[in-house]
Image 1: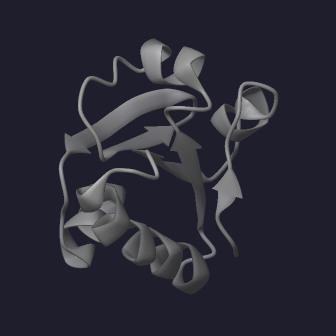
Image 2 (image 1 turned 90 degrees about the horizontal axis):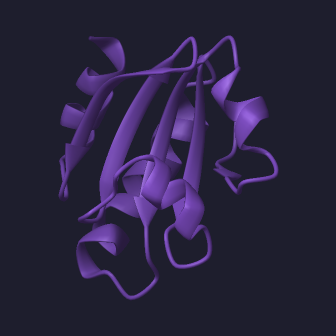
Length: 102
């Protein structure tokens, strides 16, 4: 499954998904975000049991504010519409996967 570009118009559909959701809050100018992005893409392609979305904080300031994003990259894991895990900063792929499995 491919990564979904998340915005305020499709966020409710993402939030209410039956699947575990991984959100990657990023910006194009952010170096660590560019390191995490390919791993997030791989997770989306290799794990159809997850819904993976990316939120550009420059284009979606309302969502960034709603999630209290103060530093990027920020990864958020949601289940049943609730945040169950989150981390800030670049992480190896294995660590991102373990966030989803906890």
